[in-house]
Amino acid sequence: MKLDKLVMAIIQDEDAFHLMDLLNAKGFSVTKLASTGGFLRAGNTTFICGVSEERLPEFIDIIEKKCKSRRQITSVNAMNVNANESFAPYPVEVTVGGANIFILNIEEFRKV
Ligand code: 2BA
Image (cartoon, rainbow, N blue to C red; front, top):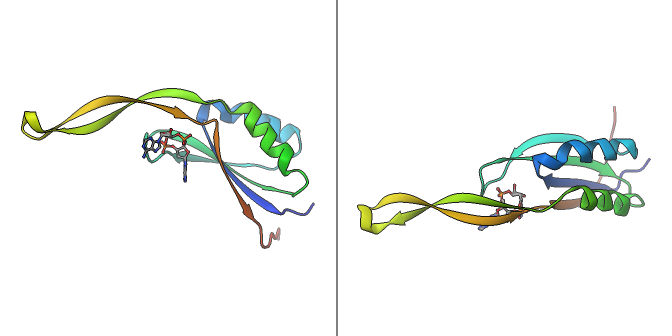
């Protein structure tokens, strides 16, 4: 099968297991990497997958269905000038996901 697109999908760890199961069941090859989000400094999962042009919509559809957005509270450090310039954490709520998907053209794919 000709692989036209390289999909890099950053998803939440909670969704990774079911997503990988379904993608495999549908015949997609997947590599799963443990990654870390730069903002939350928490673990997430990055899937890299070579996909044909024809099957790309199906692939994206599966990710959309399996990856949920979730609200998360995190602590951000802020400068507290009234307390001798010490750092005081304050809570911030962010919505994470469903998935951040990068789709790149594959110039060449070789399996040797
Ligand atoms: P994190 O960098 O840990 O970001 C987690 C969530 O925090 C983000 O969810 C977003 O809602 C929020 N956030 C990120 N940076 C922020 C900032 N500077 N100020 C305020 N809020 C911020 P998502 O956008 O769904 O991103 C989930 C994960 O996907 C990210 O984890 C990161 O690992 C990856 N990601 C998102 N956009 C990316 C990009 N343009 N390039 C590379 N990785 C990206």
